[in-house]
Length: 446
Image 1 (cartoon, rainbow, N blue to C red):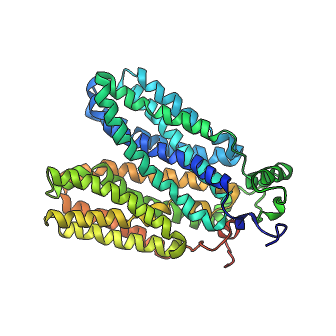
Image 2: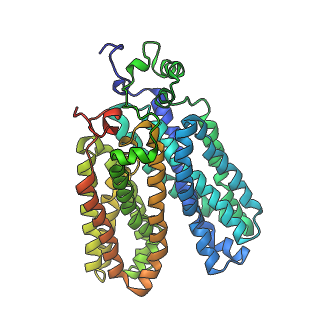
Image 3: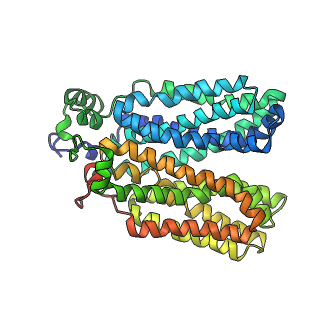
């Protein structure tokens, strides 16, 4: 294909794309680390600071609350000031508020630090994914965005391994060091992102064509320019509300609802896996083995979905993921008193099968909206889904105590089937479309 007519989305994956994937997925790694290390250090921190049950809950939920605020603010800032500038805000906040935890002396101070760490995580979602998707070739867009979900679980696993090691070696102050360890990853992320260029699509949307051409030549070579960039329909002087009324509101509703329905059971199951497994009569080695196995199967499910996302397509993947994972939760309710091996099989099946919906959480919102509101849409979806995550995390122990394990599993299955219904009626197929067509309300089929 001649360079003068080849679109940038048809250019093969190059070294820059690979490096940008690493730079962007680093934020997801830190997200998993931030949300998981609190579970490692909470017991020691609670004793040291004399936390009441109220403050334990508030500190545990602080990052999720921060993500809600950060997602909203980060999406707006990313669309207003550009991807490149906001790309460094998260790492700076990670370093500052992680180190600040070394000197906290009250539960409120720890809550405040972890709230702002959550804000940093919330900012990461819209800026990292928008920047990445606006550079990626069409054929690699889905798998590369899905990689960010895998990195979340990698960060969570690292938090459990490194956090426990720090607690063992750090003595009475181990909890402070465990919380502050996020600063190491924040600093590494900042250094890794130095030299990242601005998105040509964003520059073009701001009528800065010469700068966009310069970035394109830097990334793709002297034979390319904005002439090789697929043009999006312009929406000059149209507010976000105006765009939503024009038709993007339906897409935003789909993204927010499917994302929320996919994270509520996952966050609840992942956060309380040992307690849930004990309620299902899995004790001692069965419970320990089950927690590890479920964590690994979440990762395997996400990796499998990433490998299959282009072969299967977005719409079939999200529908089948909700359908079969929901059936696994439903059967867990039916066989709540079943044999340990059956319980682990069903729980593992859920962890494996929900991978499709998990990886699409960052694929769909980045494909379905034009450049000028892409980051806002991702930020809104992030914020909305974290309301569900916080609610699910809070309500699981309450439901286990008041309703029992069977009804808790039925509720989780019902939430998953709501996601299935939403996806059945609203999920589009964007696999073979370029970014401009995928974001158009009247996409052309490739």
